[in-house]
Image 1 (cartoon, one colour):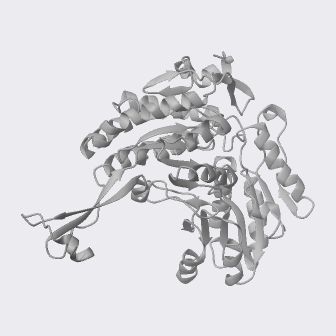
Image 2 (image 1 turned 90 degrees about the vertical axis):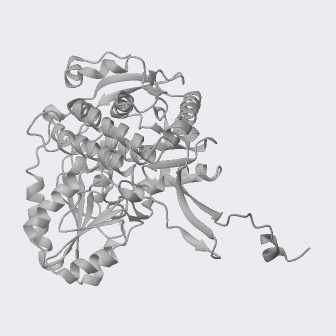
Image 3 (image 1 turned 30 degrees about the vertical axis):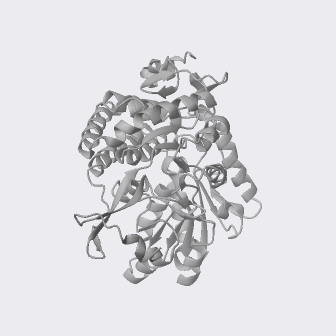
Length: 511
């Protein structure tokens, strides 16, 4: 295991827990057997935190076998038993909340206050929600057929679920994939991103400590090309749940098709932020900055395209730029930090490339550069506002995944809503207006899985999260997510005391 420097050790003293490796299979940590290693890097400093052995296809096979072995007992546990165990799980994570928050901020570079106040509490709430949902899995009503038959619907677990989570919200994405699956009686093999495995491993460990049986939750940390593709194509995996880019999602779908397995895809986003001319301008400006910069813009629901009706456009650009300039970049563990680094220098350079190319056809109003000084070793990038970009340009159409907001004007309501829909994506959107009719029209006409009115970004466990169009299909969170991890069986039986021997005549006639 790589020995971290003093700074990393102080930020996350519990990392020695991973001394046995970054795989968690059948309730135990283990080393990967691929013969290759990967180093988790603190993106705020560029310092290595933890080096581990990557998973091989054989490790994936072992994890799937553990999940398959655990499935019958977990699937046959009563809803009350699963619920009680998951409530204990929530309590264990709550007891270790600070450890989870520090690990999340260390590997992602997000401000510690964000991990403490959003990521970890949201995860605990999600566990509690699905602990309750485990006791409320419902089929459809019983019904009569031909007067003497009863028919009803059973919802049953699917089997082993292979899940792949991204690096931007590794703890919450692990939770969103694992919790509805196990609440419904499935078992899970999760592959986290190689960059950010720490909190997924701690999550599985906490589940085991809470009494969730060995093999119900397994973690394999390897590359997407080797471990991820093998997991998706595994014949003993009955369902694949993937969160990530649309390009990779297409590849996942292609592989999953070969084994005709259930598929859940939460893919990219390019959320529009539509400001009508009767909106509260101050509220919209504050909402745009918060919505665009959440998690350093590395959020598929982040506000990325602000369409502002012409009478408010110039004032919106001016005030948004001024507010962005007050955002404090800094050490994620410092109390006054508003914005941390991007996940890596490679991602920072990718974001910078979008902005640099945009200078040829648009105006960079503020930002557009990496800070120097004490932040120069980290993957930082200043909050950036771009104005005047054409609708068909890449900064408007492509997912940048960084602290960049593009602002465009529109004249009529029809035009604003048409522009909002004019990308391949449809994950989330917001509309800003004091007029009830306008707001209601926006919720109806914007093609996205979530439309906020006079707000942007809040999510809750009770409500579904998922997209339209190239943003994928399927829902995370909520009862809708819970049902997706089940399969439906129609049951019919004869109520009469004597078995009917003449039913075949109804179909085939006399022989």
